[in-house]
Amino acid sequence: MDHARLRELTPGVLAILVRRGADFAAAEDAVQDALVEAIRVWPGDPPRDPKGWLITVAWRRFLDAARADAARRRREDIVDQEPPAGPAPPIDDTLQLYFLCAHPSLTPASAVALTLRAVGGLTTRQIADAYLVPEATMAQRISRAKRTVSAVRFDQPGDVATVLRVLYLVFNEGYTGDVDLATEAIRLTRRLATAIDHPEVAGLLALMLLHHARRTARTAPDGSLIPLAEQDRTRWDTTMITEGVAILQMALSRDRLGDFQAQAAIAALHADAQTAAETDWVQIVEWYDELTRLTDNPVVRLNRAVAVGEADGPHAGLAALAELDPTLPRHTAAAAYLHEKAGDQIKAAQLYAVAARQAGNLAERDHLTRQAARLNARDHPPH
Image (cartoon, rainbow, N blue to C red; front, side, top):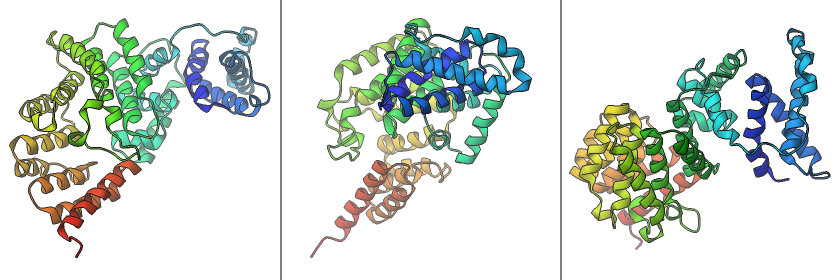
């Protein structure tokens, strides 16, 4: 059973059910039932048209549920409209579904959370981590969003800003997390860029390309993380970098700066440096200042503090870091790095060890643990 293929087909099936009149929550339940049935049936009797099979089964499950609900008996007259098995239309249902989930009846935060869960395939915990909130809080937010959209028809697509936020979070989860969604996020953003003339769409596409260009250099053969300053820059995809920079320059020339363009500008400055020592940290701090003005995001301020530490020295960076909430993700790791740059190896080793215990994934935890061990070994050399 190819579970990756099932995951790939799910958004399109869900979109078709929604377009045919199913409310979102019922459609999602029906598709999940169809997936369970596929896992049971397909190994012994694989269909010739998997998507058509899923559409037919999911639609039947939706109709069965509708008939069982007395309040929805009026919908029984659509039974004859059950879609037959057969080739599905060659359109990009996934991007359309992103827009439909960004429904005007939802707040942007709820729309993003719902789409990440229903379309992006992320777990509630992954979404909660992206939003810096407890998992229980995010679960309640998603449940409220489902209840809200269950009573409306999906005939009003949401705005571009919400869809971009969803695509950005999907890309980040694919880039740094356990689920590989980065390539799909880039594909959808390319589609959106060809359909909509919007500088922030271009900015997001540039940002994704510039980050993705470094992906193969981010990890060692054993899976361990390699910090940006230590990466083999000959392994970066220069073609992708060139494309990302060109897209960014065109977007910036329109003088409608947004936060994705600002982030892409920072990524471009990193990509432009032939070595870590040649990085233009002064310009990077200036772009972080712009990004802070646009978003006032605490994670942006954290990254800015590290950049200040590179541009103006570690003590300046630590002073900027001291103004931020110490419970922010990676705050302790940033403090450890800046203390090491300042020459306080004992304090840095202690902070790296604490940061390792706070890490959100295994690769990051192992990296921070090694950093602590490296400094401890340097401070206590073997006799």
